[in-house]
Image (cartoon, rainbow, N blue to C red; front, side, top):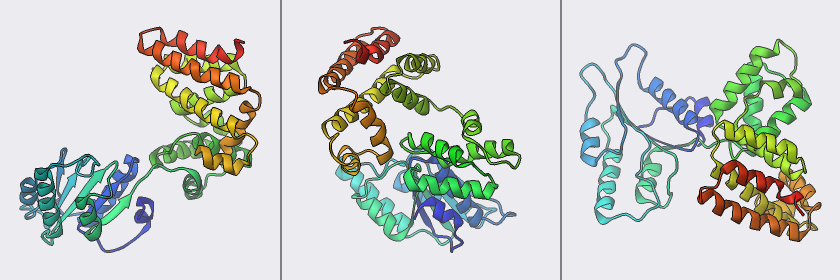
Amino acid sequence: MSILEFLKRKEPLGQVYFLVGEDRYQLWLAEQKIIEEAFSPEEERDVIRFAQNPTADELAVALASPGFFSTQTLGIIEDSQWFGSDKKSEERKAEESKIGDILNELPEESRVIIKAVKADKRGSLYKKIVKTGILLEGELLKGQGLKSYVQDCAKELNLQFRPDGFQWLMGQWDLLEGVSVGLIRQELEKMWLYQQGNPLSKEEVESLLSELPEISAFKLLDAWGSGGVEKSLIFLGDLLKNGEAPLKLLGLFTWHVRNLWQVKVLENESKDRIASQVGIRPFQVDRLLRTARSMTKAQAEGLMLGLAEADLALKSGVGAEMVLEKLLLAPNCE
């Protein structure tokens, strides 16, 4: 079940909750709901937090019985490392087996929240917890899930957009690999304060949306891919001044050029096939096709070689700004 679905439900409280996902804000929201349901407002809260994975013995002692002034005990294990995909020793397997048994035999007045960014679903402990506990997933939002949540949140706030404003907002957030629920609410609440009952236009949304480094980087790529070298150099300077890591920017360039090369090879195929083969979203195909069709295969190959040279230069200590500027100028240096 997704955390967003869980937050809307009213159901009997479970004993073991497994919160998994990259959106830490969603994990926090689920934790707060569980705490509120586990304890009445006037009850003393016996909440035990483990910053690191507890041993089986530590967990058993902590959850054995509630504190003197409380009728419930809640253990919260932050950033659990139990569910990695690395090879486990026999000792670790035995320890995790004991932990699984403890979680399956909790005292009636004890509950546990386990939090992890990722989990290997093949692990025996994962399977035990999912079988008897409640799995709640809090992934960063993207695609249709992102659009639906933005629409629901805007409706809740009575926030209205003009069509061009909503389309521009979604276009910016679609550039990211995923968006946190916390960021969405923060930005929409800010827009609601400004709105004053009038639907927001593209220009108003653009002026109100906080500029994220990831969005700025994609704007740089858009300008570069469209031949706007001067604009892309300005974006680059701003990103470097704001502390963006040069190697991270180079990684974005590499991702962009690899996709560009694949689209160039497939440019005569349908857009749906290109999106499927390259592993990108359909709206990104149009942008890449425009650039790919303005380049020869030799130019695309030259960009790939330029990336390899830039990577070597950065790792050799050459000035980051000079290396990246040279890369941006490369398509125009025939």
